[in-house]
Image (cartoon, rainbow, N blue to C red):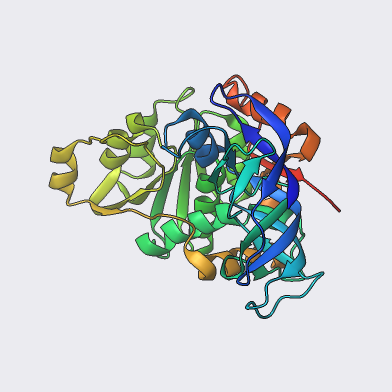
Length: 332
């Protein structure tokens, strides 16, 4: 079927282009996209090649909401008009026939995807906000497997969407949360989502402040920047037998760290991947719907699909820091 999609070229040019999706198969559904959420860290790692995806052109996006417009004969539980959340397209080409590499291709006006990758949207969750469902799920997954306990001190490096969700989930567990970021707007947002303390390394001596707030080290460090330069500092901030969560993505190459410090402290390390699956997605949406998770505060930009290329150029320029959470509106 024909659709429109946000396409990135090898030269990192962004355009909204006509595309052709794969024909719906018996185990697939066709969805008209309402909103798609932007994941700045992972998507732009794909775009820049930090994370290898495949040949250009590419279409990113892995979280969206929409309306079922067709269900395959071997699917069950879906009917036309159902509101759903999803995160992929199965196949996409340009009108010329050129293959589009998907990662996962949800930034499109329509999607044809396997029914098992689609779920009904709870009625109490705003359809626009729900389109960013993966990001709080990622933070929930990392928090869950590292299991910070009531009263623990949790240090979160990076107050992007994943870091902010990690802050919120740690706060729900009754932890004392220290947020570190170089952007004051993000730090204010971190406070509103449950951070107890905020530290800006460009304004304070970070090591001294951490020693003041946690003289013996923190119980859990969540490194959510994906910047290798933060790794050793984050490991050094842990207490003896503390925990370190590799929540960021550090690219394709090997990553090194200060073995002696980690070894001496007997640091326990956790490697979360993905958003924790269905359980984390449902929990995140429930928390959004109830108002417990004030996720709307993280959304700084909402744009129409025709404005998406300009938004992506703006983010990719590396000169702009005001985009935290962004949503793309495809249809009503």
